[in-house]
Image (cartoon, rainbow, N blue to C red; front, top):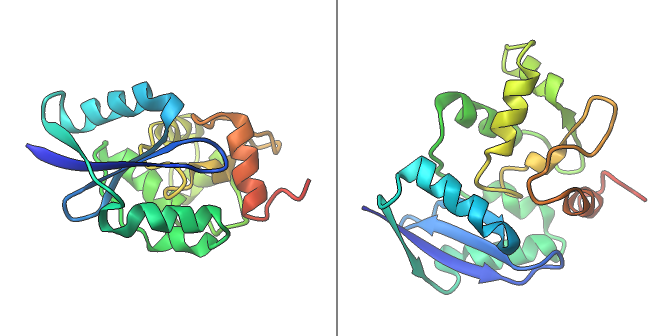
Length: 171
C-alpha cells in the first residue's frame, strides 16, 4: 500500500493540499475546495484502497517551498520532485508542462505539436485537466489559442492570479 503524507497550507488563493509519498515526491497539489476531484484522481491513479493518507507537517520541506512560491520565489517550483500515476500520454503531457517557463504560456495546439501529435489538442486538454499536481506541473500556463483563460480545474480566477503572479498577465 502506498503511504501518502499530506499537509494543508494557507495561500493567497485559499487552502492548498500538499500530498507526497514517503520519498517526498509530490503526488497531488490541490485546492481544498476541490478535494473531491483530488480524491477521485488519487483513486484512479493508485486504486481506491491502494493508498493511505497520513497527516504530516511540512513533509520533505515541500509545504514551505510552495509557500515560498506564493511569496515570490517563482523558480522554486521547478525544483520540486513529482511522481504521478496516469497514462503514458498524460505523463508525457505533464512533462512538457514543466518545460513552459515561468511568465510564459502555450496554447493546447502548441503543446500537441511539441508532443509530435499536431491534431491532438483536445486530448492534450483532457490530459492537462487530469493533472494531479497543479502549480508545480503548471497547467495554468496553457491557454486557449485566442488567448482566453480556459480549462483550469482550480477556476479561471485562480489561473489569472497565478499568471499575474508569474508576470505573464500585467493587468
